[in-house]
Length: 559
Image 1 (cartoon, rainbow, N blue to C red):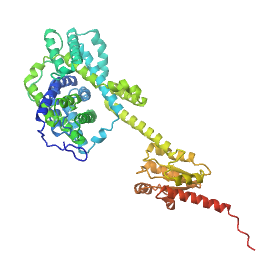
Image 2: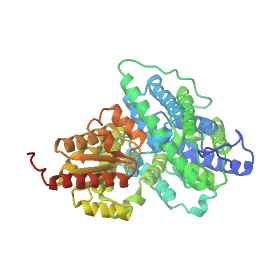
Image 3: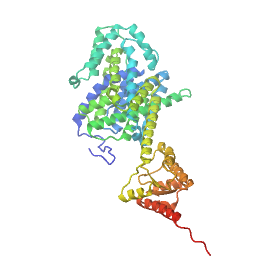
Image 4: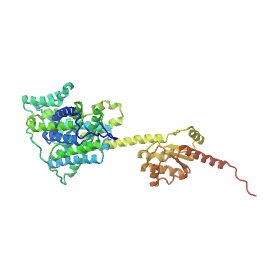
């Protein structure tokens, strides 16, 4: 597969070189997506048919316009959790609810147009792990009451958790039996059988057939057939803030979910996706879904993996997955009305379980404790507060921790007592100076965290008998304002205490920043050198000359 220098895929719009594999992969992914789409639609509050249409619209248009060849898109656990909250908070008003979905799609298109895909992927792993694990816990909490034949009152995690004790004390035995069988099938389904029938589909069929024998479990009921109606988005002053916030969360979450799945696809296919094009494709899919009353979606990891493992490689596989679901909606929707709620709840419990990052949790105690604490914090905020607070707090704390670590390392390198020397002459000159020349080597770009303490550390290192300071900028490609002010502080403190500052290795960009901010007013132009050795020679020479003048005998008085 040809790629350009940036690694973006350059394939024909419709690549037919893998037609057989794409057909088999797409059809298999569609079979896997069917029970999940129904379950996600039911969990969202919009109904199972909205889940199917979400898988159709997002899956088809994201495949056509996206930037990951083998990606299969549709409703996902994280997206459904957010959407369900929006649906509940807006009272199920379609015009308002789907206005948020349309706006989220447009925001994703904007993310792609303005090339923000590379930045969305910078979220640290502990934040992603805590966030996804929290989503898994929410999905499980929302479904536990349904396994016992009860519907939690109100939306959100807390009402769902409060409803669990009552559901356990007063179970619908038919629903409980069907839910238990569903869980048993989906958790124990052999991997070898999954090649022919996915565990989720098998659980859906077996659980539904069992409900024909074990009567009394609540079922989905009538499901609309035919094509969906156009939903005209609307806004009003009272709900505009909720809609805007929900749209932003859906857009960022969908982008993050899709790009993470794209990375999984890259690893499996040895290709490289175009993140910005992928965001545009996802945005188009979600915009169309919102206009027709379908729930939003994103790149779905499990469906993408199934597609790739069964031969799918190009966008045709994702499109065929959507076409299969379309055929199901047109012909089999009446049969889906007999599916018990407990069956879909069992399937979603397995989805939530798979989302929880057990692989990291099992080994987290062997890694940095701060990362584990950050993961736990994000998980807790996700479950008990809200998703945007969890991600925002996680990213901010991770960034601050990284800046603190980098600042500590930069300061340690800057103030180390034995400066870096590159030649024997440098070592000799420093030894001859005997602490009268102190050299500071900037090891690289300075973060604002390190810059804040540079002046303090220089004052501590420079002793009274030191008469010269050398600042080596040879490994500093650029300076920000904080670092420039730190250099100004060092230079001006040295001048006020009677010490000479020598500068070496300063590049044009660094020089321009200092001059532009007037941060070089305490740096003399005649003490700036291109090389370290020249600065050392000048500093040591000036010290010896000064000492020679002090030791010279006073001139005889004139007669």
